[in-house]
Length: 452
Image 1 (cartoon, helix red, strand yellow):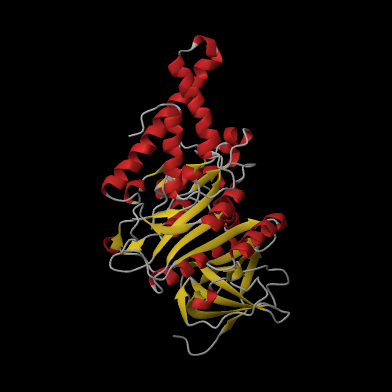
Image 2 (cartoon, rainbow, N blue to C red):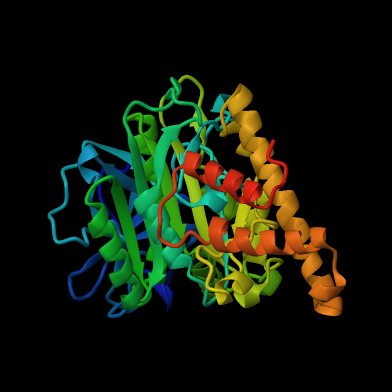
């Protein structure tokens, strides 16, 4: 460890949030750096790249007022760490971990590296037990499982923030579909960690109102659109470090919601462009896959330890293109997807979730055991089958009309309409998982269809 602080006055270039420093004697990747501005400010930065004695530094914040002659740089020989304490619950912070709720900063009880500790694959426990979101299209057909990473794919103009608000207010850890609580669940309770990236003032006001209604049981990190782009990259890492602390140190089951990962990836592209790196697909950096994986893979459970981290990232697909690099790479890393539909939104259905392309690959691990699991699986399978038939028959209806169709086909068309209106389109009403299954069974009985 370095015993004295040595300041370098060898900055050669300042390009946006990036500084190039020459003749550096000792530095390491990820090291925290202090930037001493001419006006007396001291800003934090991080070492991104080392090329012989030239070091590339990324500043956490605006670089206005810095110049190459009077600005100095000092290296700390330490990596960036996050202050942690149980007192963090119920607080709102910005992308630099400064309080945004007008309350003084808490006193840290411990510190943890912002990138977390890599989870040994052999120590990972299988995700199990479901998290109840209150939305039937998720709880009944694409169940979110404790320890899973399940993204929501949205499009511009769709009510993704209203869907996020509903999950923020209604998410619960209720165990399995049986009446007994699972012995394997964390003993510290349930909590939501919310990270919002690149918000406009209107969006911030909307989410702030939602968080104020929650009162407790959350931790929030908010990055505004006009704030430094580096904070957009830091906020998800702050959120996940806090989630790991509460999950694996305090035994809580934590749901992490990050919105919007498209803003995160755009910030990553902006930094990559400033570094003059060779672009990959659509101009995004070639390492975006590994960067996203470094976030998504922090979700999970650990053998013989209470607590869990469940991740629900929101991805707005540019140009409604699910093959765009951001949703494409997200789909490779995560375990399914929830897809919002523009067609359902135009029909006035909320939440406008298209259940056919949606999928939860770990659903089987979260829907109970024995007969409970079998009943849920049967209800979900029948609803999928009948709705898929009805959707497919709409194309035939457009050609021949209802008069040219059989009574059985008309029944499937009517069921598809009722499924969208009554089962998916529940509005702002919260349903428990049992109410969701009951609603599905009643819908099928209404049309005299097989239930089990």
